[in-house]
Image (cartoon, rainbow, N blue to C red; front, side, top):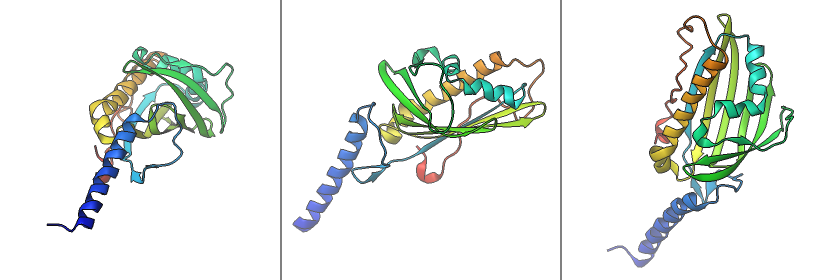
Length: 213
């Protein structure tokens, strides 16, 4: 039988782990999360990557993404995505953009900040408030074979951690990027099949073993 003090330590450890899991589920979606731990617990990150070739010059493609309201075109209707920041929105490092989305019936305000802005090849947005505890989205644009190769790399941490990612979030993210790919093909139609590397399907990026769901 363990000494009383050892049993107390074990009980405290279980309590802290339980509080971590409960707090991740109950934290209000509108709060900002500047820290990367919760009650001393490191939260897992997940990764997603997509790439797509578009038959237009990189300057033209980047200009389309430079208009924040075009996100309404690229977002699935079931999210009821709406840009709240008044137009025009001047895009540069430090720009803040507010949105409203609906996730599984819950209306959520989302604020992002453009933390990098390097036209026409790259920009990065991060969530300041919204449905994730981390959302870091890198967009890159590269001239390739007479068109533009677009890449999206996303690092994210869902509320509820790996359990919530496995149940809902991973599938939702994949569906969002698949919809975006189809819409981009409509906005920039091609008269011939894209190059082999321009797979328009959003694919999950295999994450390190320590962060797999």
